[in-house]
Image (cartoon, rainbow, N blue to C red; front, side, top):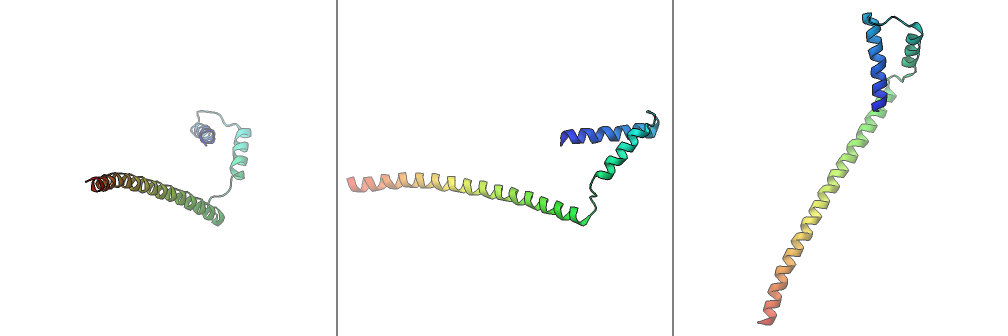
Length: 100
């Protein structure tokens, strides 16, 4: 994505330079840029919006699932530690009760 961003940025900088007069117009390059722009899918279509929202929902669902999993793991560790501490104290009391 970074490489794509850099290339789009390069085309945009070229177009700005041509527009301000810093670089001369090269009609061959401008035709290629125009052709490239027409090949891009339209982002204002209903299908694009539906796909975009589906993808966003999937990403959010995965994030929520990760948070829930981390929370369950933390709760499980807490319960395990609590049981370990409780069993040790309980075992000590039982042992003392049997001995004395």
